Length: 110
Length: 114
Image 1 (cartoon, each protein chain N blue to C red):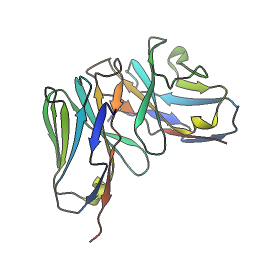
Image 2 (image 1 turned 180 degrees about the vertical axis):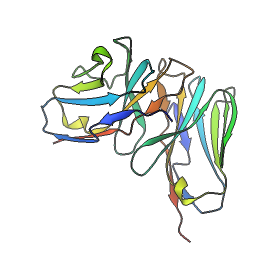
Image 3 (image 1 turned 135 degrees about the horizontal axis):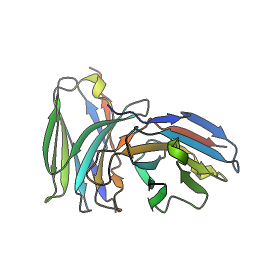
Image 4 (image 1 turned 120 degrees about the vertical axis):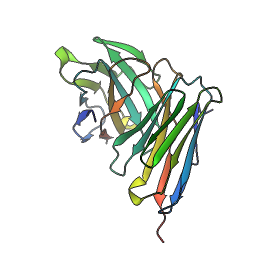
């Protein structure tokens, strides 16, 4: 099965609302990275996490290694938050990052 | 932030030909990686490279694949010969250390094998 399970697979983004993305790990994840892949395909680094939480503007992320999950919260969503969000964990195959299958965030037009 | 450059952004070649994908990693980074992404799906680890040698590789890193970084120039992924299933976006990444270090990714090279 998936070593990094991401949910939801897709999300409609309404401006001004809050959203939560989650990754569950079946590997012994030691660190987690979150990326945003924009519509052009580029991967943008959002967070690098050891167990704990980090906040950057409207984004906040947490990683709980004991319970084997990580979350990404988007506050006051904007259209530029659209794209596909990937989490990736270190701790599976040697030192390689194991990626989730992504959460596609799509703008919801009023 | 730190930038990893990949050249070219797109490459179209005929099946059976050789292709070389080039990556210019972050200047002081020591560890280099290639990942493969098919059609916007999840990224799959191919290989990592340090001090002139492959450190780890996955099952996706077929015998037709090779990597090198001659004299600190581009970090390259060569596929010879190419197959139709090699069509994908290939992402290069680099990091300062191994383990507990942020990976920085390039913007990818879209390879189409006809």
